[in-house]
Length: 459
Image (cartoon, rainbow, N blue to C red; front, side):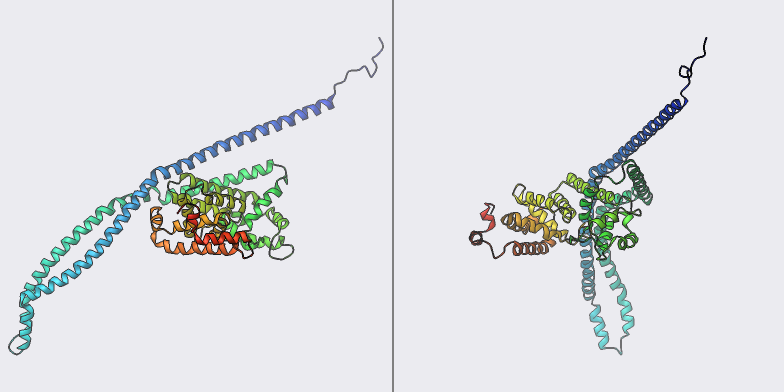
């Protein structure tokens, strides 16, 4: 039988088998890697759920348990302070009473007359011997007076101890529960969360494609956060202040001062959008844009939590003012949205007045998240949207009954009335220009004849 030709000979396709085997092995490795990554992300998600449960539990405990205890303790301390004032007044009274009673006792004993007589006849009378003979009478009288005085003061002091003892015991329990060891554990817990968050950010940055399509959108949001003073210039001081406001570790210290000259190409002391983009993408401050946006979102969530947990009008007003300070330099559109809701009569008049009062009280707050004059900016927005209603709210805010009933200190009434009135006057000078039309002039004349409250039917 003739030998088979070369074409008919069967051969094993080793090259193809090797390529297929290598391909299957690579795909298997990729599959295993994806499974491990998915498992790691699932574990991180479970850990995050646990951390959030701890945070929610802590917040719930503070709201439902500590708040009532702290309110009770605060009331007890106030009562104790009132009792201390009473004790101080009683001590002054007792000292005066002891002196007066001593003088009366000496006069009643005739000691003064005897001493005067002895002084007139110094030759025949030994004054020292006479004083020694009167000493037991005077001391017995003083002992009786002091015994009565100390008995009275002891009763007052025991009343003070009865009032202040529960508050001190509660404070002692808090000191034991929130000792340095507990504080250290909480700080370690926070540090661990920050480290895990950094690892998670690094992981996500490696999983994502380089560059990304949302860099311009992120920059548009970030540039308004960096421009703290709102002058359109992102200076070195703005960057340092942002690092402090939002607690951005990578931008603290000397790093901004080292990097700023490198990216300030034109040397004008300001970073434009292109320069700021290069600055935030520096390897020494990785993920700066995402970090600051996340910090801003965290501040917003804190404000939202304060609003959700508020139980009094003053608490909501303070949270609104904090929101104003957060968005004042970031997004004026949102500021006008909230200002319109406050001034369009859809909310109670007392709430609008409470927001104005809280703006005044927060004027000197070092924790405000903007260098802008938040109070003046918000009042200008309220004036522009609804100036007559603003005057009504100002009149209501200046009322003593409103101030006290909403939990504000009466000692701040005069100062805040003056401050908010100044803001309103400045807003009126800004928006009530002299080149208004005849119709606006007629409206102004009619508004001078009748008060804004009557025009709105609220007087």
